[in-house]
Length: 397
Ligand SMILES: *Cc1c(COP(=O)(O)O)cnc(C)c1O
Image (cartoon, rainbow, N blue to C red; front, side, top):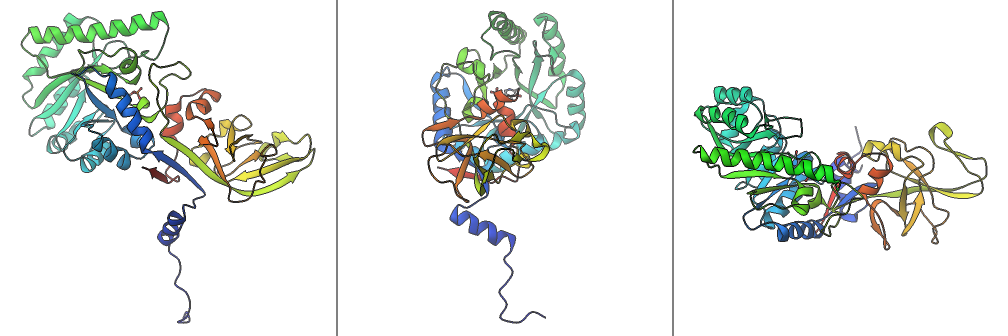
């Protein structure tokens, strides 16, 4: 038996609360709500008056944390939210009970009653899926019909607007589908190439043509949407009733480094701390695989973040991180929970506990998720979505 004087065991929750109070995590993501507000307002100023803002908050708001992001968006006046699946839709329904929620992705048709009960709008990609929804629905399910006008992923074939309209006419006979809109998705709206611009124009012409043909045949739908972030800022079209804005809202570029005509601010920063500092001599090796060998005396700091946090191992010997506002190269391989930086050039003495910025700003220097993505052949979207659950999201108002 434990003596009565023994201290109670510190529970995990207590440790976390203590860390939170002192803002002492070993690694965390900062979510800057003023940057989010800036980006939303910037996009809202270029939206045609008849086009409503639909915030794309799929995948935990692109990794930023859907709870804080949805609450802030609601506060900013956003009323439409797009998600990728039913689970995400139900989360947003709880966070923003009076919002309009649109599911871009697949919902097993067995869940049709769940969609209706929670007033969620489902994207319908084919005749077969429409029939399955009708079969499982008990009351009308709100739907927007997806056209494939050139993305080649899902949707009713939209190559011939006349044939497409004929196919869609049959949907209006399904009495348990409440069809409120049609939409499509662009494949190359983020590209500045003339050929790609023409391709996007063709996609846009197709969906608008189908919309107008349906109206001529007695089905004037309430909603028509096709713009993603890139199209919203480069070619806002007043025919659209909704703009599906994702990446730009989070302050990243649709196609870095292609410039966009609006100024945006990154919402997420990723930070960690130094756990250990040492001096290495010429010939000393760093990390798995011995991919880095010091050529001379260097100061090396170990940082408590790794690929299990979503900081890609592909960044080994490639990226830099900021310490006291100085960019320090990663030396050797990124490990699961740790990585090493060469901090020799930092003017200040680097100590255990010092903050390291993997992306974000520090002392006037900035590293963006887009820049890290470009180094390893991916996009900023994948960097922020890939930050794992192990990283607490700290909201900065
Ligand atoms: C994810 C997604 C968007 C948002 O795209 P961004 O480039 O992030 O603006 C819009 N529409 C659909 C169908 C999507 O899947």
